[in-house]
Length: 360
Ligand code: NAP
Ligand code: 3JM
Image (cartoon, rainbow, N blue to C red; front, top):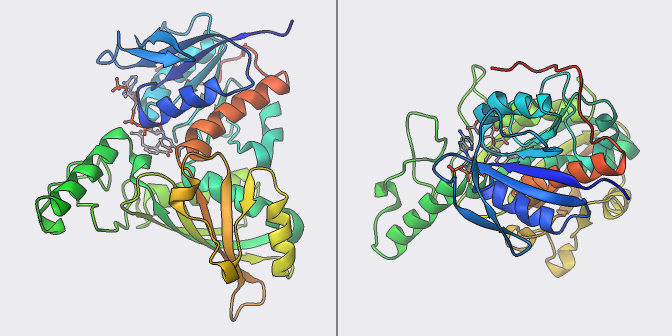
């Protein structure tokens, strides 16, 4: 009989962690036992896994004995602190935070695009940023057939990407404007655009051109994640990638306006056909019938939806498209569980003897 795994979710009470539990319930992964971790504040809370009551535990350095696969989604600092202990205890970690993504010892994986990168791992595999993942699913079929020179992307990102508290903040602000007739400028914001930044702005009836904090080059970290992660996943340091990341008052699903320049001329009919047959991608593109991807339709689905594919009016190798996916599923929980499934299918769930990560 094939091995059955003890699987842990760190950050189990969060927006992503709750979806990880759902994705694991539906997964083909043979699961012997599930362990759920969060902070001491949540310890003792009961969550359901397939109707079974599981008690949430506090995350500690010595929590990981006997665990085969640990899915981390509790923030970069939590992964930095605990993921190396999980690896030391013999687990394979799938990390959903940005902490290890650019580490050369860590594969950064979207299974439909670069599952082969899993073959050489050192105990930690990183799940890319939500905005990067869906763009990779849409662009890999085009890259394979026509090559890619440049990507310019503008995102329209859902508030659930900033966690459970950001969803609550958005809903409260909308209620205050609609029910109490407050001017959107006057509602009190405490989290968005970035929990860790000095100023906070209302998101209700607004659009904020800031996701995560700013870096020294005036791009935000979210924008630089898209640039750097895309080059790593597509193994092309020369690929030009610039992003503008915008938060909009949508609860679920990120939408992206993506402009690309291909290496070879790419006829639109062939681009559509390549996307339609790529695993994980769904073509929704019929202007004559007003068919194109929408955030509300993508929510709750694992796929990435692609439409509005059209030639640039001036640049011969330029193409525009609209890419939409559930940011908490393919953008986080599903991509992580899919990585775990792929590790299992390829016989790569194994303890690592040479610990490459600092115990801090
Ligand atoms: P969230 O709703 O705020 O949930 C945070 C979770 O982390 C909760 O379960 C929380 O436990 C737990 N946690 C916080 N501090 C902890 C600590 N010191 N030790 C152990 N657990 C701790 O946030 P979320 O939206 O689920 O996102 C969680 C993380 O996932 C993010 O910080 C980010 O790094 C990553 N993420 C990645 C993507 C992606 O693009 N791949 C997308 C979204 C999020 P309590 O309930 O006990 O506080
Ligand atoms: C998405 O470390 C933190 O506080 C989490 C910040 C965060 C991240 C991140 O950098 O890991 C919030 C939402 C992400 C992400 O996926 O990059």
